[in-house]
Image (tube, rainbow, N blue to C red):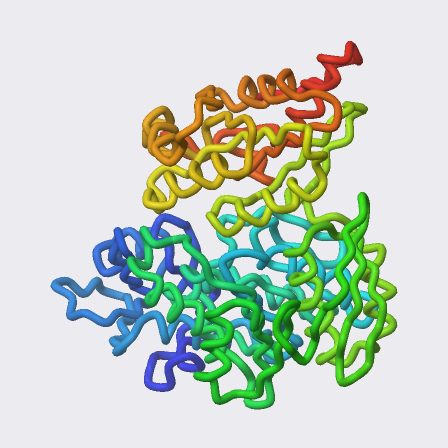
Length: 487
C-alpha cells in the first residue's frame, strides 16, 4: 500500500508492513512510536529504521531526523495505528459479525460457547485466552486480546478464509491500551465485574470504566447484552444509551433461567424469553455456567440463529478446556481443573464443589497466585479456601520473578485453620492432593486451567498442564503405565 493512501499528504512510497515493535525486522515498514508503561517508541526509531522502517509516525518532536525516512507527526499515535491497521488490511472488522465479550470471569467460556453454537449458523472464529481458532487453524496467544497489528492481520486472514462471524474476548487491559479501538461489534457482552487486576487499574471504578469501553465499539445498530444479576450490570443498564438486552437467573431479564437442576454430567433449566418457557439441557456444569450459557444463547438468538437450533446445539457442545474440567483417569474421587484465579472465580468453583461432594467427604484445593499481580487478593483467596475447603495445598502459579514462598505466605495470611500445606513444586503439590483424597472426595486444581506453561524469572517455561500431570500421577498411584511428559 502507498503511504499516501494512509496519510494523504505523505509521499507515495510503498509500505509493505506495519510495525510497532522496533526489534522485529520488517522491510519497507511504517513504524508507530507507541508510548507504553515501560517503553516509548520514540526512543527506538533508529532501531526500527535499521530493521526496515522507511516511515515513522510520531507525536513528540524529535531531536534527530534520519535521512531517506518519511516522518509523519500526529496528535495520537494509538489512534492512527488503529485507523491505519484497519485500512491496511482492508477494513476486515466491517466484513465480519463480531461478538465481543468482557467481564472479570466467564469471557473465555462465553466466547467459546458462542463459537460452538453459532458455527452451525455461520462459519465462526474465536480469539481469546485459549488461543486463535477458525476453520482448522489453531494457535496459542501472547495476550487474551491481541496487539493492534496482529489483530487486524488475523481478521484479514479470517475474512479471506470465508469466516463470517467472530467471538472475541476483550480484556480490560487490551481495551485500556487501545488495542481494539478499530473493532466494530454487532454485540457487546458484559458478564460481571469483581476484584481483579487492581494492580493495573488501581480502583474498581477505573476497572469498571475500562470494561465499559466495549460499548463504544458497537455499530449504530449494535446491541449491548448485560448480566443484570451483577450489580455493575445493573449500573450499566442505567448509564448506557445504546440498544440493550439483559440476561439473568435471579433478576427478571430478556433471557432468564429458572428451575435450575444440576446433574452429574449436565445441567437443565427453563429459559424464559418473551413469555415463552423452553426447557434447556446444557453439557456445561454449575450455576455460573448457566449465566455463561444464557449469554451465548442470547447473543446467537439476537444475531439471527433460531432458538431451537441454539438449544439443540447447547446440549452437546464440548467442554471448554481448563474450565471446570473433570479429570477422569479411573480414580474413585473427583478431580476438577479450573482457571479460577479471582475471589469471585474461587467462590463459584467452591460452590460447585460443595454441591457435588457428599457432606461426609473432603474438598481439597491446590492453588497459588500470580507473581507481580494484584497482591491484595492473595489473603482473600486464602480466606475463601479456608471457608469452603477441608485441606489446602499452596503451590506455585506464575511466580515470575517474585519468590513463590513469599506469595504462599501472603495467601496463608487469610487462612486460620491448621489444614494447610505449602508445597511449591506444583507436581508434588498435585501428588499430595491425590494421596490425601479418598473415595468421593473432590480435588480442585485452580489457577492454571488450560495453560501448558509456568511463567518464572526468565519467562515462560514448559509445563505439561494440570490435567496431564494429574492423569499421570493417578495412573502411577494405581499401578497403570505412566504417561511420559517433559517438564
